Amino acid sequence: MNYKESVDYINSSAWFGSRPGLARMKALLDTLGNPEKAFRAVHIAGTNGKGSCAAMTASVLKASGYRTGLFTSPYLHRFNERMQLDGKEIEDGALAEVATTVRNAAEKMKEHPTAFEMMTACAFLWFASEKCDIAVLETGLGGRYDATNSISAPEVCIIMNIGLDHTQILGDSIAEIAAEKAGILKAGCDCVLYQQSREAEAVIEEACHATGSALHKTDFSQIKTEFDSLDGQVFSYRGEQYAIPLPGAYQLRNASAVIEAVHVLKEKGWKISREALEHGLYAVSWPARFEVLSADPYFILDGGHNPQCAETLAANLLHYFPTQKRILLAGVMKDKDYASIFSILRSAAEEIYCVTPDSPRALPAEELAAFLENAGWKAIACPSVAEGVSAVLERAKETGGCACAAGSLYLAGPIREIFGCY
Image 1 (cartoon, rainbow, N blue to C red):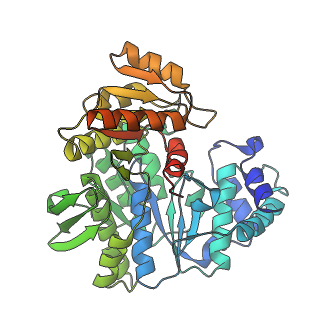
Image 2 (spheres, rainbow, N blue to C red):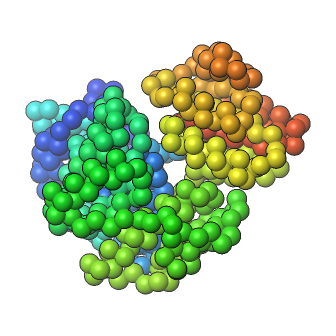
């Protein structure tokens, strides 16, 4: 297969979706010669923050001189973004090669793997072929039955903030969802836990006890902000100073989990100097998370797609733009809790321009605008994402305010491309 055929094959609707269980994934990896055994791993689960955590962790490991893989989802512009080695995306030819190998193995199986299982197998096969030392793996959905959980015990598991999302699959309570996330814990690995609700922490503590996993908790009281701007932040954690190029207090909390995980890795013999930790955090890049795309007027891009993300976004808008008029550009998936999302964002904005993200699951802009009008918003449906961007920029200029796009990561790629970011 060539590159296009590979991506089309993996994304084929014939095997799209989620089917619980790891039997297919383990059978596929067995057929491929178990590439997941060729490298060590850091495994990350959670509802929010796991992507930022993964990017920071990989940046630190790369700065330490390790050949570092990174597997994340979803992507913003190109499929290749899902799998990276030392900060570089897999090349088209390499993806076509591993995808062809995975296809040949998958088509021999009685039950064909899902799309995400094949993506994961492609990443594992590529990491193994490139002699990756350690891979940072972000779960796609949940944890227990996620394809990434086919690895043996990782060096460390990181469980990030847990909230209500994908409730139709993971459960309708924090405890049920936490139990699914805790499914990545295995005997012999340590667990770093992002500070969160007592309900979630109790579930993770019990899972650690059951698996014999040492538990390391972040402590947000140890975070001290020393400099804060849209260009980045300087902070201290447990008395040590660091800097990150990402705005928002939540990124300091995400960074604290990375710092705790680095301490665990060092205890296990990984050579990570203080300088590498500092440089890795400072050098991280993670777009579409309160990303500034324009400063005249300000245009912020945020992929927030659930109530927890909306709370963070509202807090950031009020913090960084306390006196300006804030205009939103939004598009959502119809299966998301958009009623709660916009109820939360109401505290940070009054005007909203609606667009339809490029996804079969998208809620049409006209339906979203009608819903928001009934909820008391001033809402306008735009024919396209490009026209929506133009409208909010013009409105921001008129009012001396700022514009912000949010609601779905499916908007992020097209919007970044409008601003010349690829």
